[in-house]
Amino acid sequence: MSIKGKAYIVGAYEHPTRKAPDKSVAQLHAESAKGALEDAGLTLADVDGYFCAGDAPGLGVLNMVDYLGLKLRHVDSTETGGSSYLVHVSHAAQAIAAGKCNVALITLAGRPRSEGSSGTKPRAWGAGVPDQAFEAPFSPMTVNSYAMVAMRHMYEYGTTAEQLAWIKVAASHHAQHNPNAMLRDVVTVEDVLNAPMISDPLRKLDCCVVSDGGGALIVARPEIAAKLNRPKVKVLGAGEFVKGQMGGHVDLSWSAAKFSGAAAFAEAGVTPADIKYASIYDSFTITVLMQLEDLGFCKKGEGGKFVMDGNLISGVGKLPFNTDGGGLCNNHPANRGGITKVIEAVRQLRGEAHPAVQVKNCDIALAQGTGGLLGSRHGSATLILERE
Image 1 (cartoon, rainbow, N blue to C red):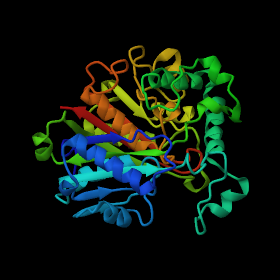
Image 2 (image 1 turned 90 degrees about the vertical axis):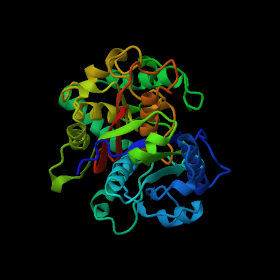
Image 3 (image 1 turned 60 degrees about the vertical axis):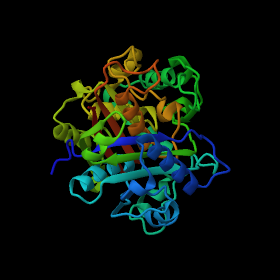
Image 4 (image 1 turned 90 degrees about the horizontal axis):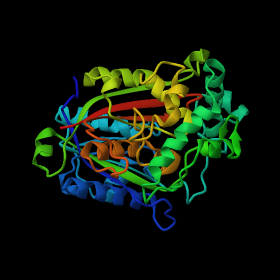
């Protein structure tokens, strides 16, 4: 069953908080939900489906449904890290098409900045994780996992640090117009190359920010969307894929976006050439470059050339990306940036992005999420959205 045209994103809200020492994670979820519902012109009483992932406190769905006072027909707590919330949009559209719910609420929230989290310490997955015994002795952490992928890409294709730096430069050009962005100063390629090395070849400015905050989305059936006084954003296509170590046949040259993107484009009936704006998960600069290649915006190995010379800057390049500043400059709430990618894509399609970065005639947009570690196992989810 295709979900093309079966559901609409009718509400979107990005929490403005970037540091919240005075708020609980549940409160951030609730405030984000309130913002998205108000944006849609709906109330909690209208919601009959709820979606959340591992960032939700306690038992996730159970605790949040109780906290929010929801009465539901459908719940989903699919967990694929930072890509979970794009998967949730797809699953919400599937549930709506199947008659399981009419209005789905999706929330994300977290406080990693207040809690002192970073990507420079080994990740503790807990007892019983099957790969732990094989990988823990090598102290894998977020940043060195992505650095390993970047180094391999440089070796395979001649990608340079200067080319990666252009991705940060583009994000900074957009963030200067976002009053909530953590990093609003425009940077140059030289600024990025002169930043402290974190994990070779990734420097400090190649890495995303760590922020508190959250976000929420409302997905509804077409009949409900038609009655709301909001611009209509249709879900055209979606895809998801998980890439692991493949039984030891490790190949760091590609990401799971290769398959999630292909599925989304096939369902939507469009091609990369039709995309006017792209929200690309940007935990690190290499994350963006890899996904652009695997989504088909350029050939494998040509990502470095594709992102150079401002090609990702709105009003300058061919493919405007992350016009809110993205994870590299704006925010990365709960160390999971997937929902913010959908939120900014919705803003662009509605014509509600900042005037300085609003893409002209933006009718088709792509949102791409990645969760987990690009260097070991990760999930990928792709959404293609259309302004009606």
